[in-house]
Image (tube, helix red, strand yellow):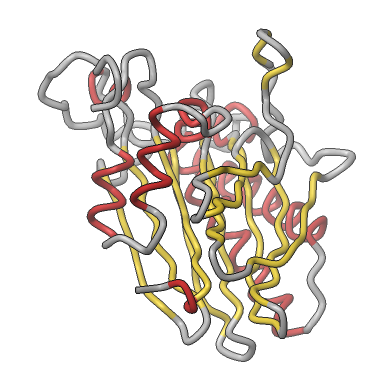
Length: 276
């Protein structure tokens, strides 16, 4: 519970139509250089209305370089099979990035194009008469975290309003890597989404060092986080100073707060020098 909680009720099972996935998923592991934790939970609105979780996250390690390849996607509520779209986008993006690492040449724009093509193929297989945008529209944020001489070199891109932050563990502050989706008090309503390919792709790069944590999440996490100065920011700054268990991250992410009832997904990466 954070501040005023939402209503209490027993979640209902999601309908099979539109894709299926567990209410909650979590994962966690370490390489010699980084520790990863991730979790994705169904929002209260979807639990109440028998809708599936429409967020997904995936992460793998590229064996040749020790690079973590990751993706987070948030299927649009307007898409009839949003859960399928998010899952397909994550799998396609991770697969494309992994293959590029094999070839030692990473091209984010090519990853976006290949992911969009995968969504079109998936839509054609599911419902040949339907538009892929209507069936599988999804946001996507994906990238790599490669061990380097000065820290973990991160490189990522996004389509839509999912985002990423660097948490300064010592100060408990969150530094957004992408522009926030609000402009003053006006919230943007138009969300860029795959399989539409943007003319200009948002991309960021940097180095993650000891005392910092990379956070990649959907707007179900980003909206209540805000600028990180409130109660949600304080909660996650305290519990993510060091890697929690995967189950505890899922528990944290499933906090109850009035009006914030969307699916929530968060992937976090710590340099191993700060793991304990």
